[in-house]
Image (tube, rainbow, N blue to C red; front, side, top):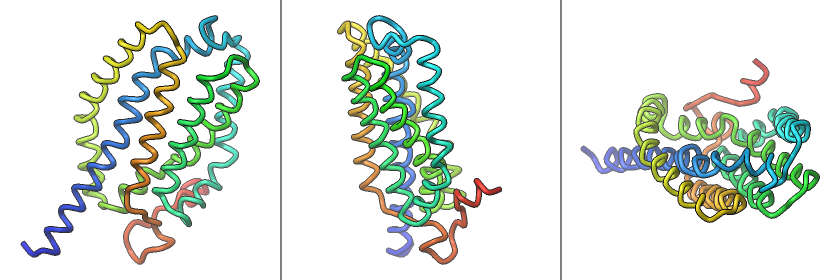
Length: 215
């Protein structure tokens, strides 16, 4: 095996591992901490005590923001980088959670809804695009296969942390901690190598989120 092929294999494995860790930190750790407390915080007297109508508007606003800017964020990812788009998505979501943990009324909570919508738009398709452009079809297949194996320990740890936080008697702490974890994950993502798909490379993956939306 040549030095070039050895280095290529090391990078190939590194990219897959980075993707798995970044996704697991959000999907199977941070969200497992958030899930038991989020609805309670939003709808009970221990948190914001939103009415069903208010909570429905909150969710709808996040979705509306995503729909309104999804095409634009696809252009952003294609031209300025998939890693950057993914990292910005995490920063927006994390900031939204930290803001949510600090407020006590419906109006200010809408800031979080907007930030969540922006985050969903920026992350839509970009993390898979980053992975595919870095390791190709076979590497993506391997990453997805390993992802759910790694999800087991991350989920278990997240559940333990959530259980411990329940003893503190505050719904704001899990919300804030989720925000911190997601921002930290965004910083971790920003250490990944950047790629630009079909806008900056010859060959490789020809995915463009704008093309997908048009289709």
